[in-house]
Amino acid sequence: MTLQRQAFFWGVALVVSVLLLWLLSDILLPFVAGMALAYLLDPVADRLQRVGMSRLVATLFILLGFIVLLVIVLVVVVPLMVEQLGQFIAKIPDYVNTLQQTFAGPGQAWLRDLLGSNLEEVQGSLGEVVSQGASYLTSFLTQLWAGSQAIISLVSLVVVTPVVTFYMLVDWDRMVGSIDRFLPLEHRETIRQLAREINRAVSGFLRGQAVVCFFLGAFYGVGLTLVGLNFGLLIGIGAGALSFIPYVGSITGFVVAIAVALAQFWPDWVSVFLVAAVFGVGQFIEGNILQPKLVGNAVGLHPVWLMFALFAFGALFGFVGLLLAVPISAAIAVLVRFGLMHYQQSRFYDSRFGQPLTDDPVT
Image 1 (tube, helix red, strand yellow):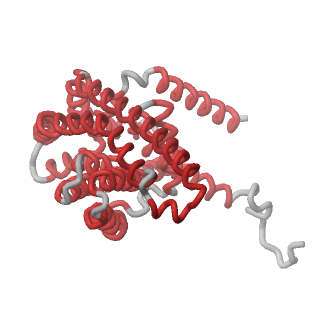
Image 2: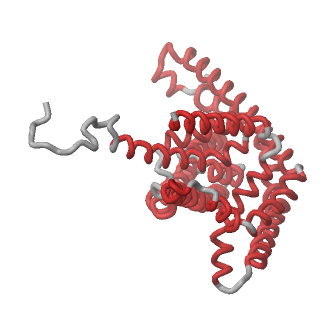
Image 3: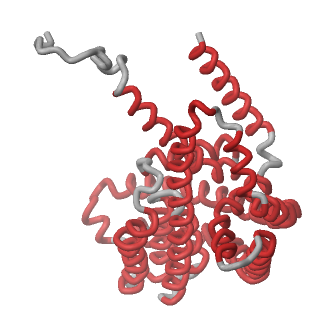
């Protein structure tokens, strides 16, 4: 009966937490972002404390650096990206027409020789697919552009997030200690061990993946710009940011970059190849150097499940869900592994568990 009551209590607590998160998702962004920043910056504050700074001075130093970086991004990077995004949206119809004329136009004799009487059907299908894809992409980018402007214009995100980060960072160790004192005495060590595993998984992934995304965004942006691709900086930084979702950033950036390159450079295959080479080199560096050394198997989740978690939480709770997807998924993964380990050591898995060993063969 005690086990049933505990299961009922934690089940109700989970349902209430999810419901509150869904109801308050529109106002939670600056608070969740502030907590996430405090969590990521806590090791920096600890190191500054070890060199002699007080917690308050270390927090003020970190917050000042964060504000300076935020101002630089808002003043220099964001206006440039918004301008390029608006121009890119306006150019999409022209790119679509160019691609259709290049690969499915009536003057392509090599396609007619290859497909014969099926050419008209293929041209119609290709045109419909390209037009539909362009429509979806235009709609998505328009919403993204409008959403970016809305996010930037929100005073709460710019003002509330640093304030929340400051108070959370100052009191982080104290809050962790307060929570630790309320843990059930009987299960305290088990909960501490699980919390350490969750922290190791979440911090390893978030900090490592943030460095990976920053490097890839800079590499793709600079590389595509140097090879002369229109909107290369926008496409590169976007691909780097989307690299937080496994495979999605690289695939999306590659497809968009190649499509723009074909529309811009055709029939100059050398330039198209250089665009593809930028992504090839970036993927080689990510897969063989950055991911193994910075991220590894920190979360312990298969990339497919991680993608599912990001899309599911994003669909349910918006941008707040994207911030919460990885830590919640990592916590669930640790708890599931813990539960499976205990299951394999229980009578539910092996009815002989806990029974004295005998010489009689098991039948």
